[in-house]
Amino acid sequence: MIKSYDYILGNGKFINLFDIITGVIICSAISFCLTETLFSFNFKLSFQKVLIFTILFLLLLLLFYYFIKQRRYKLLDDKIVFGFRKKEILYRNINSLVFTLTYRPIDVLSYVEQLRGQIDALCQTKKIGLQMELEHLPDVLSADKLLLERAIMNVINNAMDYSPQDSSIHISIIGGKQHLKITVTDAGPGFSQEDLLHAKEQFYMADHSRSSNMHFGMGLFITKSIVQQHGGQLDLSNSEKTGGAQVTISIPY
Image (cartoon, rainbow, N blue to C red; front, side, top):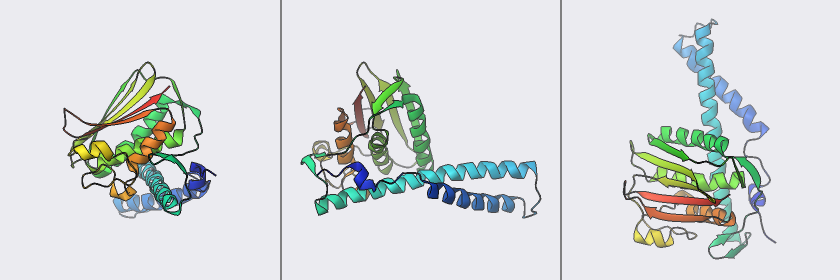
């Protein structure tokens, strides 16, 4: 019996009612304290105070939900590793995980803007610049939205892990005749020859691997499996411009 992605997640939602209530309470409390601190705790209602509270609340809420998603992604990766150890996850061969894909039409522009918000928040916390290039985007892409996001964010997180502070990562999303190509380039040390050969394999953890230790050498392996099950391809190379790693995800329309 194949254990699907839903099984691994425990049929849970990434953002549920408890998360919403918790986020609102925590962000409201922090925003209130910060606002009152700025106004010396005079506890008088004013337009400036309401405006500052609202801005702080929205910013904190955005960060809260971003870190909630990242934490659950990490738990997902850990459960996949645990599943391998317990032999609870079947895979077609040594290089391919089996996921249950739920294809739905995705509004590409809206999806890209959602990803941009997540990536920009992560860049700000790590003091890394973000450059995005969008060309010839299709209106709609049929894919598993959650799994595709997981694959893309795995690559982004790897790029962040190996990017020097105050450098930039470059993301290009370009629509071709048959494929949507997502290319992530960083300014880190790049892939070694061994990495180029083996970094997409499960549990590969060479000293300079782009597979983060936090994912037990599973990051690019999971990404490759998701992309391949969408009928796409994952390619690794080094950028001639920056000398850093360059990872390209190709997904068919």
